[in-house]
Length: 167
Image (cartoon, rainbow, N blue to C red; front, side):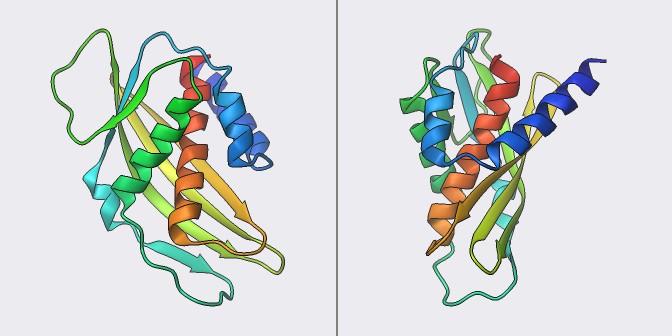
């Protein structure tokens, strides 16, 4: 029953977030109330994921540092939240006062269409013997870089996790 409810919430979140800009995500994040601070740990296996391009594209931007881009996305959300969020590089000692969440990027697709390009980033969040998968998205209409789109799609996916976990 609980898993079914989480799936319904997840699907609803994905549908709603597909229409949200990252500035709207900042505003929505400011309304979330989490029970304790959250520490995100970047899974180094994420670095092996390649950005898959679909459709015709012009030009080529530099491949971003996934971990630094992830940390920046967490920090941007932290600026807008009532709950403390931070990103670290190692798991460290468990603590009852902080939720430690390991995050792995599983897939990145950049879909170039006629009038826009959509980057989707599939994320896997593991914590307390639980697992939540989300898909972050970012749409650009004129120009975008891998780094900028990845940061915004990561931010979207992290917000989806927070929306499920915190409320």
